[in-house]
Image: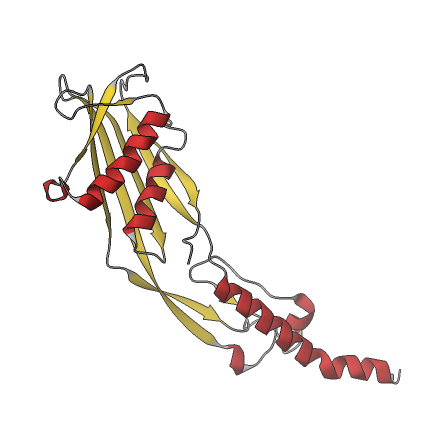
Length: 221
């Protein structure tokens, strides 16, 4: 059947439409920060139910004791404990001693590849849309079999973590251990630590020995 003029017009401008779509999607990806997950592990044994028990947050690492930064994060932990019913007390006489530590590593590079899929032909992508997988290590195909779309994006990601241990002052027995760890593009502790603390206390004290994943909102630029 002979090709009509209208069909020829659509095919002629198909690459332009696909190119515009690809550029729009790429712009959206660059400008959109995504949430990430924290792995939260919790263990408890004879943790007293909140009934007026007092607590004090102390630095597990002696180098942090008395520091202004530690004091800020200790306040975040104390606020969460107050929310579940415990009462802030004097470090020398409190019923519970809460040992707290935090940190972030030096980071490592993650590679994201952008470009056409080798299984796609020059036009199959235009009819089939685009695909992508994950936030890190993703590979995007926009359907144009064109080297212009082959790109590699290297992003530095950091592993941050907090550790929290609660013990009875009377006999030193540990009654709770918790850890929250996350991999994210940020290494800013003032942003990371409060979010990890919030994740650790979600559903506190949780199931003994269970590890859960808690979503953390992206850092505001």
